[in-house]
Image 1 (tube, helix red, strand yellow):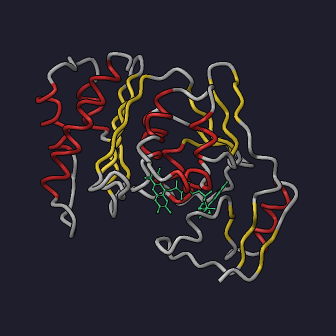
Image 2 (cartoon, protein in one colour; image 1 turned 180 degrees about the vertical axis):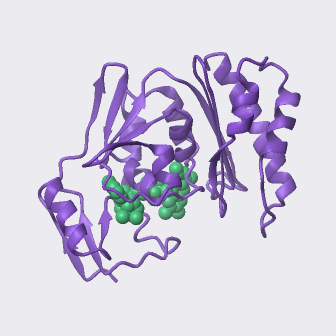
Length: 256
Ligand SMILES: Cc1cc2nc3c(=O)[nH]c(=O)nc-3n(C[C@H](O)[C@H](O)[C@H](O)COP(=O)(O)OP(=O)(O)OC[C@H]3O[C@@H](n4cnc5c(N)ncnc54)[C@H](O)[C@@H]3O)c2cc1C
């Protein structure tokens, strides 16, 4: 149960509070912290509410999205590129989109949260008090720095999708593909498993023809390592990841 609610007024104060009370957790919208699914149950939280981190600003060809911007505000903003909006529309629960923030979703590092795959495929970056770090590095390492803003490229050929048993159900498999001048990014996340880039396949497919959907789907399925769970077999998850990601890759290669 939360028994102490700290309300820093500055970023420096927030970081100092975290250093002084390592068991305390930063709290943004609280949708995950307070969810029974997270089992976090912290006693002390450090609210980020008064840090002035709710903004969406264009900075040349990049958008800076403040850590406290909610997913619904992002979906409703005209500056946001379609590849991000398309992904957020996969997440059907408007109540949580109203409460949950972008940085909060990233900091959970949860492979079931489909927004993570699209941010990694787009090469999005995070501003923290001490450094700029890619979303990929943040979610695949033990970094837990305070996120101040997320930087996403405005023009990116990125496409994403997810598989869940029902439209509102948890994403069992989320995928995203990004096609850049010299690189392809292929990202797969599995609930209960990992969020990962298929780097060997990215290299193998660079410069290759990306038109044969069945061939691509087969290659991707082979590259995905999966596991059986009570909802879905490993074989099905490999298959569905292959099909969805092949479609995404073909769309991204055409500029979406
Ligand atoms: C039932 C349910 C279904 C969901 N389904 C989806 C889905 O389909 N797709 C999807 O993309 N997402 C999904 N989500 C995730 C949702 O996007 C997150 O719950 C939400 O974005 C978290 O944001 P928050 O502001 O509420 O975070 P909080 O609950 O406040 O915090 C979550 C975690 O992030 C940390 N944190 C928060 N802000 C920062 C920061 N600025 N810097 C560092 N650490 C920070 C906290 O300490 C905590 O560990 C779902 C969540 C729930 C509860």
